Image 1: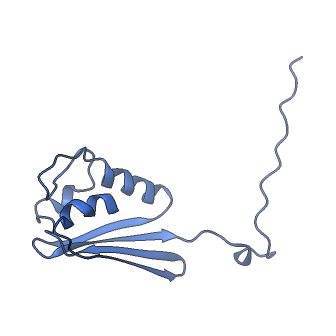
Image 2 (image 1 turned 135 degrees about the vertical axis):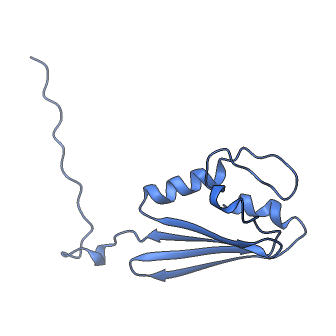
Length: 121
């Protein structure tokens, strides 16, 4: 995600990040004051192979698609808000990992024991 912001901030515009822990999620925001994303492109930016770069270069269009897939695979969400000419903000909501304090016994969950496969007859 950060790699996608860098080309839009080529004129040394500031990039900011914030992490807010809140149960049961962690909220991560990454904002820039770059060129923004055109309204017509917003619905497509998470699609595989879609690419629009402010620096005129051509990308593969996989970065945000992969990011979205990974975030959602682990139960999170990613969203974007942008205004052309004013910048873009990406917001991720990620599930917190379960800690020892979150389990009823106060211990980390133990993995289920596995039995070795039986030898062939």
